[in-house]
Length: 325
Ligand SMILES: NC(=O)c1ccc[n+]([C@@H]2O[C@H](COP(=O)([O-])OP(=O)(O)OC[C@H]3O[C@@H](n4cnc5c(N)ncnc54)[C@H](OP(=O)(O)O)[C@@H]3O)[C@@H](O)[C@H]2O)c1
Image (cartoon, rainbow, N blue to C red):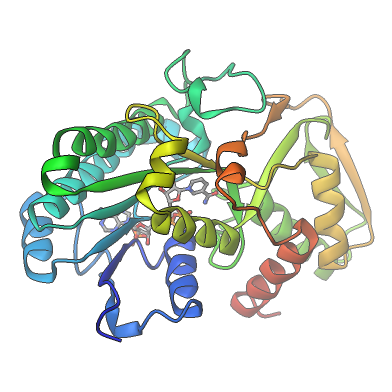
């Protein structure tokens, strides 16, 4: 088994990083060929420590799933931390990996790299065509820098050193390991928690902000991890045929969006809440539609496998494991 590449998964305790480790193990990758470090063991914003780590471990491949992430509130309150930490994590990993001879990196960005008013569905070439959403601009700028770091290292060192650094931009994700914090979670974990509590308390209704009509796309996190391995392992000639040196990132989505109402009703069904769901149109709706154009990845031969309701059933099981009655 020692001919398997040595793979460092950065951020392995997070929702996406843990799914990537699960996926590697499922695909038969030996556990002793997977390297991980918790945040406490290795602070990726510390350049000297990151260089020392790479110099001693010398991984063949790196999945970059470590990032400082958060919702609107956190992004608005701590913009300095969001831009600084994410830039440092990316710059440190990519430069240290290059110095240590790592040939392959997969960087994870986010759909927030696209302009606020990008045409829907959002395709890769919408990048840098307009202004970003103000609340997460610092985070998005750092993620765009991550894509450009990968591309710049490829352009300068691709031929001479054989580096091949790629980026994927996931849509909204959900699944095991999600953050269910009452104030600071994304829409799916927040609704799972609210319907679960409403069911336990026999609440007659659950009120949801807005009209329920905006459309959003979601992808089950194990599908995301499968896509990450797929893109990492695509032969270079094929990857190069479908990308350009300065437009190389690849969207990863399910290709299907749903209204907030449909999302809420499906979650209520999965959780077993049979009270009323009401909408409060006096509250803001946000963007009417947010959907990735994943045709680049689909053309490369990858499609999402897990249906929304099936993914929610797994996510709710994981929630119950961590929030026993
Ligand atoms: N979740 C989504 O819906 C979604 C959607 C699109 C893209 N993504 C992308 O996927 C990636 C992972 O997201 P996630 O949802 O898995 O986030 P997550 O659950 O918060 O995981 C991030 C991990 O990175 C670690 N980390 C952060 N800063 C670090 C540092 N300075 N040094 C070492 N470790 C550090 C965190 O450790 P601590 O918790 O100990 O700090 C955590 O384990 C991010 O790049 C994100 O943009 C996520």
